[in-house]
Image 1 (cartoon, helix red, strand yellow):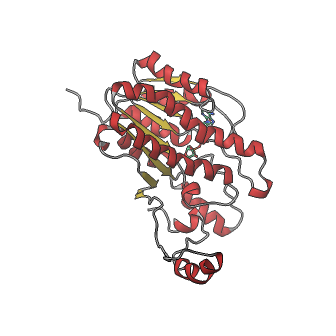
Image 2: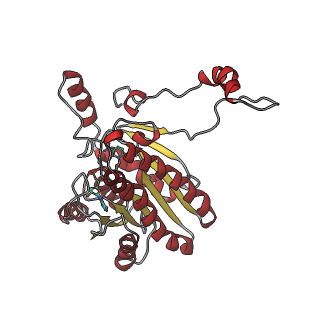
Image 3: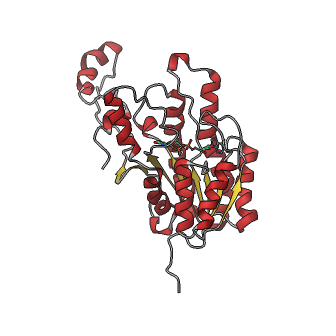
Length: 306
Ligand code: NAD
């Protein structure tokens, strides 16, 4: 008998799997035995244009390895088209077990120049899209009393980055969405987790490489191929991750991290209450030593990927 694989019998929807990290996850899930819906509108990095070619390429890779996949080109960023993505899994394979919210676009602009359209376009794909696709699958997960969500977040949201107010807000919002799903659907045996991935892809290919320092940094990022993020996504989608829910992991080349969630880190109290003056005088000196620095992802992950 063939060896049992981690996702045998499961059906996975992977959004934005026409390239980059999504493709690597779709391929790894198919290798692990899942039947896969490759969802991708084939957009440019900024979210423009439509093409089924990237999704076709992912399907070829999966089929050449003996896996099963279908293509869906509906956008995640709309309630009714997100319903069609999930319906595609049911029509093609008769069930749905896994949703990977990976589709994404970038509209990096410094905050004081960011337009309403830059904001809305990015929130629509990452945050609203993750809600729409998850919500469409939730009906089925609830009925069958099983299911796993994996949402691709980012250290740009968890920690911070320049020029990404739209993206950072969406990506941190996705972690709250994931935790909320984990809380609300625990009773139905449904799990929800986030991965903050690192990879050289077209999303990171705009990082400047003018100076020797920048070139060295880009060379380090280029080592981090998208497939390095896939094993964690496969694991979280599988029954081996039973009991793992509401967590945020980061995957960076051969490193895996569990990320922290906000908790009170220092407190002060006064029986008679506070005035603004007393906050300046008493509370601030006590709290200041525990302030988070105004740092960026690259400063926290400051060492070479291992
Ligand atoms: P990518 O641009 O290669 O892939 C994103 C895919 O999403 C594209 O194929 C695009 O066509 C598709 N897409 C865009 N809008 C869509 C929509 N409305 N509906 C369906 N599909 C749509 O990017 P990537 O680097 O592989 O990133 C994948 C995910 O990982 C993204 O959510 C990204 O924010 C996140 N991420 C990436 C990195 C990194 O280092 N590359 C770091 C942190 C987070």
